[in-house]
Image (cartoon, rainbow, N blue to C red; front, side):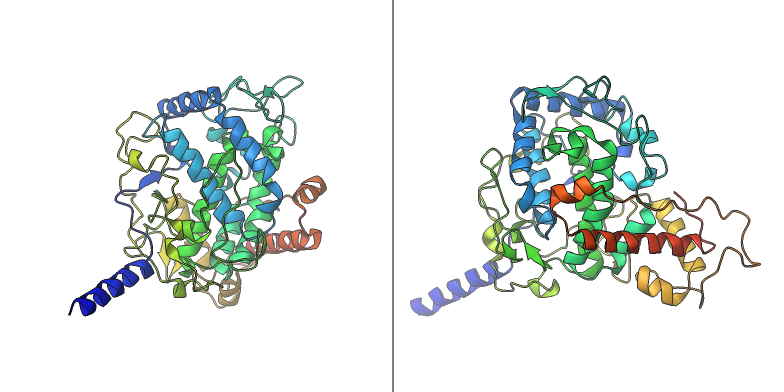
Length: 453
C-alpha cells in the first residue's frame, strides 16, 4: 500500500512538471511610452542615473556588443532580447520597485519620426549636439558611459536634424498576421522596423553597444510586444524554428549570456510564455497570459521533449519587487490592461491579431479600411486575420474612389550596406524582405485604403 501511494506521488509530480512553470502571482504591465507623463519620464531618468553611476548602462552595452553575432540574424533574436530587456527591468526595479520598461511603437510616427513626442526633450531626448553628437536633452542628458571607452551617450539622426520615414504600421500588421513561422517573422521584423529605428536614431543606436541608449530598451520592448501578439494570434507559444545561436534552433538551447549581465543558464523555453516562471510582465494592448501553461504541442516546437522546468533559473533579481508600491514610472504596474481578456475585444479576430498598433481607435480604422478596400484574395495573402468584404481590389482611380484617399504610404527605407555587413545578414534575404514590404505598400496605395496613421 505504501508503494502504491509512493507511485501516486511520483505520478502527480510528473504531471506537475509537465504542466510547466508556475503562473506569476502578479504581472507588471508595460505601457505605451506615448502615454507616460513628464513625471513618469523623470522617474525613469532618476533610475537610469543611479544605474549608470553603478556601471550598469555600460555593462549592458558591453554584453550586447560581445554577444552581437550570436543574437542577430537567427531565431534567437527574439528570446535573447526578451530575456535581455527583462534583466534590465529586473535590475532597474532594485532601485525603484515600481519601474517598468515602457514600449515605444515607433511605427505610428513613421511619416515624421523626429516629431514623435517620445523623442522630445522631456522623454527620450532629441538629436545629439556638437561634433560628438552628445545627448543634451531627455532622460539621459549629458550622461557619460564607459564602453568601449568613456564618451557621452550619442545620437545622430540619419538625415541631419530629421529622420527618414520608417515602416508603416500596416506593413508590420501584415507580418503579424501572415507569417506562419517564427523564422520568417523574425526576418521580416529584424530587417524592417528593427533596423530602421536603430539606423534612424544613429549614434549609440548604430553600434553593437546600442543598449547604452535607453531608446534601445523601449524599442526592443515593442518588438517583444509584437512577438507576443504573433504568438497569441497564431497560437504558437513554443514555435522556435530555423537556426538558433549555435545551429538548428531548439527550445532547450541556453540563451547566450555574458558574464557582465548573466542569465544563469536560462533556456529559450523559459521565456516563451509571458506570465509564467520569471517572465512576470505583459503589455497594456496585448492579450493577457493564458490561464494555464500552454502545451508545447500548440506551438510547432522542433523539440517537443524539452523540459519546461528549465525556466526555473536562479535569476530572481526583482521577482520579489513585483508588488512594490514605489512612485516610479508606473504606479499601476500590476493593473489589468484594458484589452487583456484572453481572446478579448480589440486585439484578436479568429485567432489573429488585427493590427500591430497599440492604439485601439486606429487599429479599428485600419482593420475596416483594409476590409473595405482590398479584395479577398489579397487580404487572405497579406492580412489573413481580417477577411475581405469585397471580391476585388478597389482602385484609387475607380469611380467609387472617395475624396479623402489621403497621402500614399511612403515606401520603407532600405538597410544600409554597412548595417547588413555589421550583422552578417544575407543580402539577398534582406532585399527579398524589402521587396515584400514594398509590395504591401504598393497594394495599399493602389487601393482606396486611407491610413489612419
